[in-house]
Length: 214
Image 1 (cartoon, helix red, strand yellow):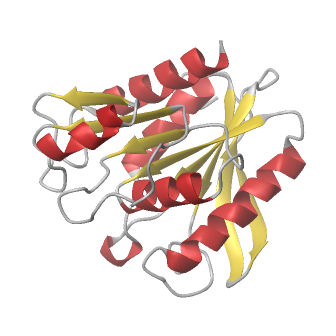
Image 2 (cartoon, one colour; image 1 turned 90 degrees about the vertical axis):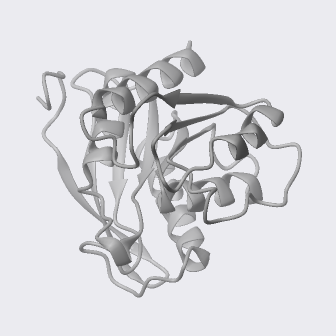
């Protein structure tokens, strides 16, 4: 049981990646899951890894939505091999991890969830590999310091979450999300790491996955 959720014990997994071993933590509902979610962490050069609290709460929301949750250390982060590649090589890691999830759960749809740097990598993959994942959830997408992808007519479903006190998020610039037909939820008073508001990350994740799976 994880945080009051009926679930199997967390399982540490190792995936053979293009830059070496990728390490992750897989959590699954006690009863049969309905989908799988790949969760991507914030910037590893600033301490980001699969153990980040925002990522952990995203996984809790996924479990509540009856989804298996794989929190992955991208290359050069946490316990994974390789060297951080500013998001380019990490796209290969996402591809490998989604394939692994597809083999582990062959009947499941697989979603991508990302926080900060992980949200940027996840969105880049979602847009550049149409059909490889069933939907995208972005938390704290850092549009104040990075430009949105150039692709137009973004696939769906997509949903984004940010605090209105997040210094890495330009609230006005989030209009791009609405223009592309995606949901955008802004949390009043919340900062980048959602201190005191982590339950909002959990609720956002559970709510959108449950809606998409209904």
